[in-house]
Image (cartoon, rainbow, N blue to C red; front, side):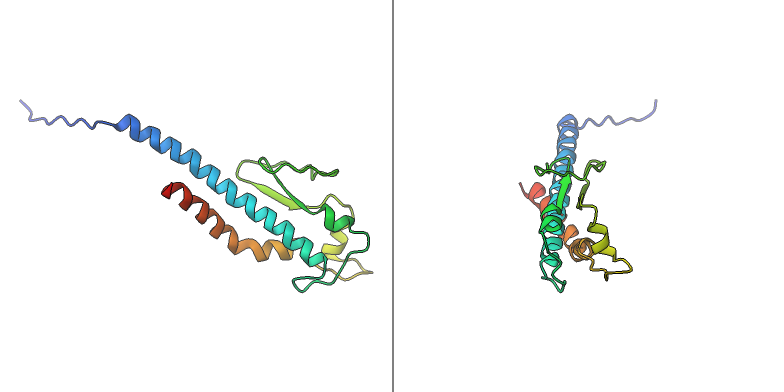
Length: 142
């Protein structure tokens, strides 16, 4: 006869349910951090176009500045010109549908480049991790 010990852990179903719930809450927390960062990138890009953050004021009609915005599955753009980008879960995009936006960002042979979107994305890059961590901490402490 083999010696056997039967061990039964009670509450495993609840534990698994809690893990599944935490996963969903953690995904939402990451999405909130991503969305907050995409909005911050849009705000920084607009400030740069206005001449702030070391940028050259590049506003003549305000169309470009006004068109810069963030979109995600959770951020719905209410303006006239959406970005029409395919956006996955836990993703966001910031940009402009204005056709000459790339000329300002990258320059042409006639005008010098003044990065506003790229500059803003780099500026907010380190803050993305901070925002996601902050949102995840809310889930674990809540």
